[in-house]
Image 1: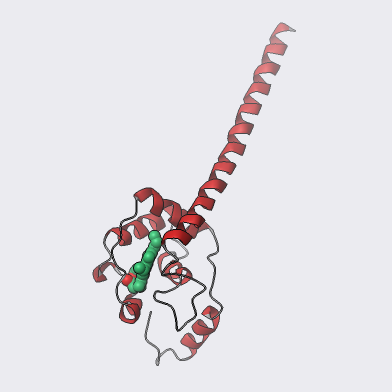
Image 2: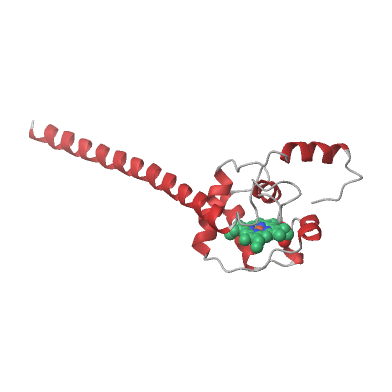
Length: 152
Ligand code: HEC
């Protein structure tokens, strides 16, 4: 009986430990991504705002950036690394959106900590980025008149 209760107690202890670890992990991830959303709005939406109209915008909306950086086989770590790389070296050679450079001018170099970019990238990778109203229409037209439009 003594042994059985020891086993039971340790089983219970283990279970509650893993269980609370699990809940904690989910909460942390959730909180992290929420932080990423706030940072994205704070630091990137001054230019990459999904609410700007097509004629008023001064940079491509973030969803367009995401489409160029996240392909179906891109892992989260690759995505983070590619955004970090752009933030550190925003030069034409590293651009995946050369059409956007032609339209808006190259993104000015700004300092953001690695941690900030990491949070923003994780949020972008895992969530649906707000889409401007004109976005789908614009892309439909783009594929229809593909030859007439410049790539961006
Ligand atoms: C001062 C305006 C401005 C701010 C703020 C800004 N960007 Fe940009 N960004 C641009 C412009 C303009 C472009 C399009 C031209 C280009 O690609 O360089 C761009 C393009 C990009 C690209 C695509 C680069 C390429 O050509 O492949 C990435 C990635 C990007 N921005 C990430 C970010 C992130 C992340 C933030 C916030 C931490 C941010 N930007 C904040 C202006 C800005």
